[in-house]
View 1 (cartoon, one colour):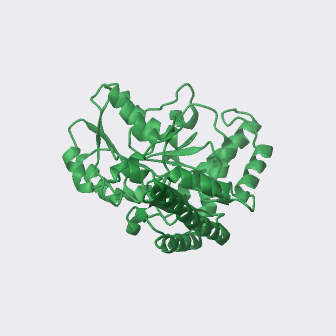
View 2 (cartoon, one colour; view 1 turned 60 degrees about the horizontal axis):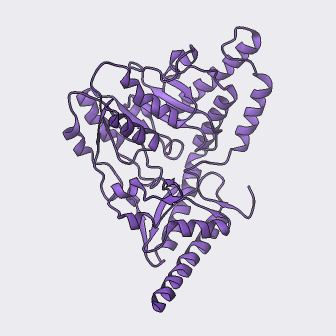
Length: 388
């Protein structure tokens, strides 16, 4: 990474771990066959693929046959939802308004087409869904409840265990999107008792283009992509052995380093909070008791997050708004709106996220430049108001 760049957008993607790249290069050179082919190169590739699957299963505490490789989190999320369209039964889904667009927008689109009906769980001001509201939303035709493990914009960790206790009583499958939580705090899909879970490699320093779909033994599943017998007929298409090995290598490294890595990320979070709390107009989005150690969503009353982002980018500090940009217009984040922020407040918010390669110099650059630009923009506003 360029020494003049300070990358603080790990919730979008993380830099590739060096050991992951080395492992992938080795596989590309030695296991180049199609894993479905019966000859020696094909068998070598199949063996490496299944080794990676077993390693991931061991690291995650699940059975290896419960894991299916996909192209990423978005495909996995779509596969979970769309399988229920195959059955000739009414479809009622309960999601949170915090979900990734691959879930929420897909569900809303299918509901608009009358292929399903959809209810959204209420959210408190701290960014957590309210488990006590779930029972009231459940209907006889409820086929799925889906709530992410931690939100990608705020870093707020959701009460999955409490939700599962309710869905379990009603015999309703529970899915959790673990894309942001994987490798950042300890999780166990088996202990949580969820039926389905999704994850991806590139958020933790693995390669882009590969995800995981967890289907608990005994849970129904109808494939989204058909036309081949790969992945035990759960996902057609030739598997990428190198990407699978890269995923396993990344997760192994992250989990091995998790105690000290989490401590370092938590230290960065505390430093950022302590400094920004002294900045005029600052506010934090998300209950600080339930935050991932690598994420903060912060706002500055009366300022434009887009302007702050551009100013920081010119200084070599890369952050995110956490909002969708459509047709050149910065739209307020649906996640922040669901938490009770006004559209104006939501447009003033930045997402800051760090990870395995983040250094103290990166945090220092952020804490030097961000308060500077907030002060500069406020002085500019004051001069403008004075003239008027």
